[in-house]
Image (cartoon, rainbow, N blue to C red):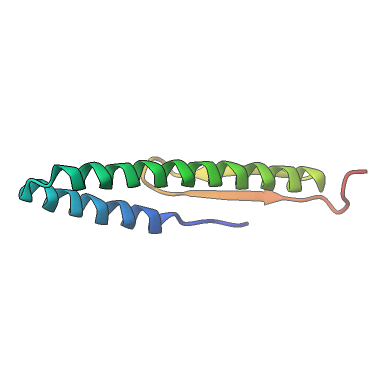
Length: 91
């Protein structure tokens, strides 16, 4: 079983949120727009990467007569991506 923790990106978002709060207090609206653009672009790249990696994992696992699934105890509790493979690759 494999699990993956995505807490690192959440810490980055928290840092950006803190920066935006400071910029709001200082009235630096241009900096806020730049920060929001960086957050939006980073989230889009991360989403694309995760989608591609999960699709690749699915193809590899299914090529080995296996299955892949996700488990979670609920919102905010994290997720665990699991897989099993057969003993021989599909012909």
